Image 1 (tube, rainbow, N blue to C red):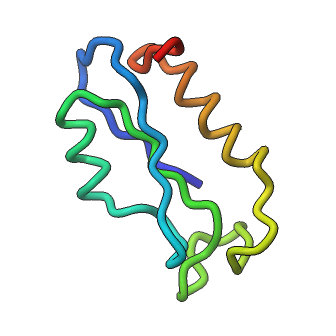
Image 2: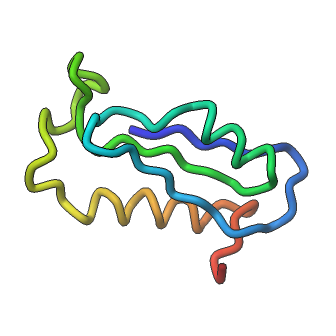
Length: 87
């Protein structure tokens, strides 16, 4: 579960994979928007649920999170034309 932030017409820049800390859930939307506003395509990725059980479908605790899940997010960010894969 993630959200991708970018500005229309942004030239190819290094992409940012933003993760939340031990609180779980999605990273702060304001921070992701600020990075995108500075020209950095940003994928805010949740990798386990927050205290309220959101987002659904993710592990309920920070325990044995598969690295493949994070790599899929990273690969998706790399494939976006606004995020240079060599950066």
